[in-house]
Image (cartoon, rainbow, N blue to C red):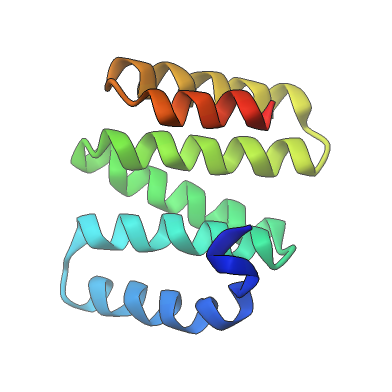
Length: 117
């Protein structure tokens, strides 16, 4: 479970970090903060906000070429999609993430994705 089951407590800090990164123009940090916020909102059973955060993070990370963040966003989206009834879309997101992590030489993430499925 995200943040030791303390997602509600993490939300404020994650939102503050995102806002600070945005204000300072730190786009890479903003992408990471949005990806974390996606996970927080998913843990808080707010799929609409979680998806919006993941998609915003994904757009920034793609623009900046941040492959690990892109892949983690696909993992988050895959989990979210599978949890809320879109199994095929979730599988597609997880497959893409697994390929990306494999290409980056990150076998622990590939193993994590196998456990999700």
